[in-house]
Structures are given as C-alpha cells and as structure tokens.
Length: 457
Ligand code: 5AD
Ligand code: SF4
Image 1 (cartoon, rainbow, N blue to C red):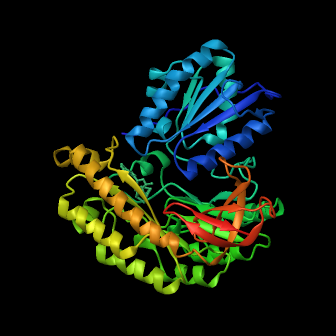
Image 2 (image 1 turned 90 degrees about the horizontal axis):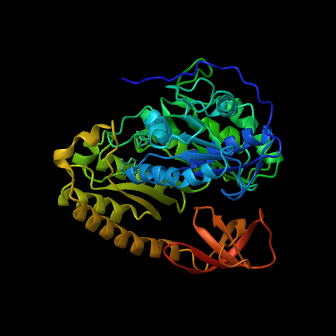
C-alpha cells in the first residue's frame, strides 16, 4: 500500500538566504533537468546565488533518478561522498529530491542520515518551506502521493537562453510493466493550454528561439481537461496555438506513445514549419510476445504502420526511438524481431537500454524469465553495431546539403567551434567566426560521422 508522509509543523520562519550559494546536481531525464531549473528559480527568489562547484556551495540539491538500477547506485554513491562535504561545515544544507527519493522515502535518510531535507516529485514547489523547517526543527522528510499544484509561482532559471523546456503534462497513466515512472511521478495531469501559451510568450520575449514540450505521453495531452465541453486529447490543437507565438522559431516535443500517435498530429507537424521534422517514437521491442508482456498496447505491425505513416506525411523525417534489450523472456527470435524493425525503420538514433528490474514493477517479478547478463550484453552490442552502420548513412545523407542550424554554444573541446542542431535534432559542429549564440543560420554540411555533422558557414 502506498503511504503519504506529511509534516506536522508547517510554520516557517526564515525569510531569505540572501547571498548564500546553491548548487544543483541532476541525474536522469529532461523532465528532471527542467525540475532542477524550476528549483533554481525558487532558490534565487530566496536570495541564493548559483555556484558551479559543490565545494563552494552552502545549499546543495541532488535531483535523483530511478529509471534503472544504476541510477539508484549513483545516488547512494554520491550521498556517501557528500558526508565529508556536510561534516566540513554542518551549516551546509543537503537536500535530496526527485524520483529515487519518491521511491525510497525514509530509506534515503536511513542510508544517509546527514541529509537535511528529503522531498519527493509531488512537492518540489514546497522546497523553500522544507528548507526553513529543517533549520528550525532539524532534518525533514516529506513525500506526498500526488501533485496538488502543478503551477509554480516562481519562474524557472533556465540553463540555456536559446532553447527552453516547457512542461505540458506530468505523470503517466500507462502501465508498461518494466516502468517505474507511473509510481514515482503519479497520474497524468495536463497544464492548462493558456498557462503553457503564456509561458512560451514570456520565453519568446526573453529571446528564447526553440522550445521543447515535455510530457511522458504528449499525445494524450489534454484528455484530463475539459476544453470546449469535451474531454479528449488536445495535443494537435496545442501545436497550432503555440505555432502562432511570434519569435519562437522551433518547436520540439517529447515523447509521444506509439499507441496514441494520431495522423492529425503528423499532419500538423508537416503543415507547421516551426514544428521540427523529428519524431521520437519509443519502440521498446519488436517482438509481439514481448510487446504484449510489456503492456505496450501495440504490436510490430501497428508500430511499422506508424513508421510508414510518419515517413509518408513528413518530408525527410528524422526518427529516433528507445529500445530495451533483454526484457524477461526475450528469446533470440524475439531479439531478431527487434532487429527486423530496426532494419526496416532505419532510425537516425536509438537510445538503447539493458533491462533493469525496478522494485514494484510487474516485470521485476518475472525472475524465472530473466535473461542472462552475458546474453543481454551480446545482444546490446549487436544492436549498437548495427545502429552505428545505420546512423552512418542516415547522417551522411546531409553531406553536401545546406541545413538550418540553431547555434547553441561553443564546443567544450575547441572554443573556435560552435555547436548546435539542425531541424532533425542532429548535432552540428560549425567552424565559423561569423555567427553568435542564438543565431539560426544556413550552413553547409561538409562531413559526417554516425554521431554528429560537420559544417562550414
Ligand atoms: N529497464 C531498462 N530500460 C528502461 N526504460 C524504462 N524503464 C526501464 C527499465 N526498467 C527505458 C525505456 C524508456 C526510457 C526512458 O527508459 O526505453 O522509454
Ligand atoms: Fe513508463 Fe510506459 Fe509511461 Fe513511458 S508510457 S513513462 S515507459 S509507463
């Protein structure tokens, strides 16, 4: 049974931490990255200033992930290392939030009693309150079972001034048997369209050029809202509304679910020039037996039909996917079925994962069907090798063409090189001193690898 842990004392006293330095360490997905940006906004409203180093900070927030086992291991490893940081100066404050905290609740404190605040995914908006309480009464743990207020009063402090994440929906109503997300992020809640549009208009005024709409299942966006007296998905209409916002030049979204992907959305993508021709559509497995055991709600044939539909409606679509290798019961033949889809679809990019049993998920109980580690490793390598070949020619198709690139930042390795992305999401390294950050420019693609493109202006 799920438990809710509520605090008794809600009175707070500290007005501000003016001048103190904060640092945020984020694990996991784009949703977590964006949550960290929201928390940075709350810290700054409280008077704190950002520090790029842990050692230099007074307040440290660890935003955790639990999607696979190694994410949990990383958390407890990091907390172990931070005992010294806390011992050096007991006035420092260590806060832990995000998905692993939501899952482990009191275990975080049991394993790392030096943590000052443990909070979950549903009460990030309450972080300053909890920090105040820990100063007044000692360490606190507050984990709630649902989000009651999706809107934050504070604006996020974004890592980039060019591209911005915008949450359109939180949680997930699906029940994929391998996935821990529904239990740590809760049910699907959509933000009101007007709140989303207002936020993007504000971002446009601040100079943001590209936005990425975030949700676990974006094409079911809106089905929990009553819009024009109807409860139904509103994602396609949302794309049209956002497209009208002046100043925004590119719109990305992630992730749609194959079972809910509609033709009307693809038509919108093809009709709306600012919506990119990049579609991320998670396959997970190509085997009908495994897809059914995963509760994905589609089979190989239906997935391939979606791929055909994407390719027929969107000119030169760049398609990416997620694949899990070694789901319990996956035989050699099942894996070959996945390879069949990979060869047919010719994805530009695959995010590949080895199956990791997550506590509380249905698939974690299929122990008698677990695939041996060395078999998973072999399959993972053959998928990786095959995809490298496919990515090689998918990236090479751009060589000799002119593409629109949004310049994001100087390369970490070489300041003279600017990095950014073309419409399909492919990373480009541009050798040029003509342009600056935030410029959307035509560049000539001169070379490619399976992982990035090279361009000249
Ligand atoms: N094991 C391995 N990969 C997983 N993913 C989600 N849960 C698991 C798990 N238990 C992958 C899926 C999902 C991506 C975000 O992470 O492919 O689409
Ligand atoms: Fe997890 Fe499936 Fe929901 Fe994606 S759609 S978050 S994989 S349960």
